[in-house]
Image 1 (cartoon, helix red, strand yellow):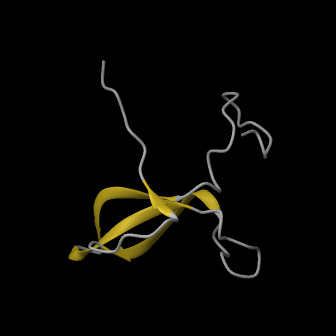
Image 2 (cartoon, helix red, strand yellow):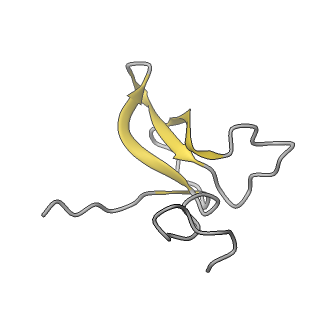
Image 3 (cartoon, helix red, strand yellow):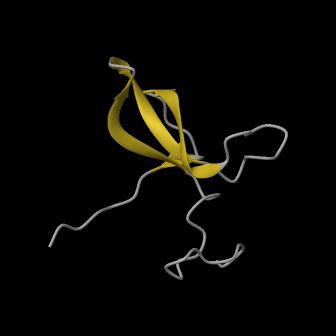
Length: 75
C-alpha cells in the first residue's frame, strides 16, 4: 500500500505487514520456527527488533493474523 518509503530496489512495505514464517527451526528446536521481519502490530515500545533481518522464535503450530509467508519462484 506504500505506507513506507521504498527500499533500495524500489519495493514498498517489506516490513510491517506480517511476521514471515521460514523453514528454519529456531536453535535446532523442531517445535519452534524462525519468523522474520515484523507485523502491523509492532510498535516502537513493543518490537525492538522491527527490521527485515530480525528473527525470533515462534511455535510451529501457532496460527495468528500477524503471521504469514512469502512465496518464491526459482526460475
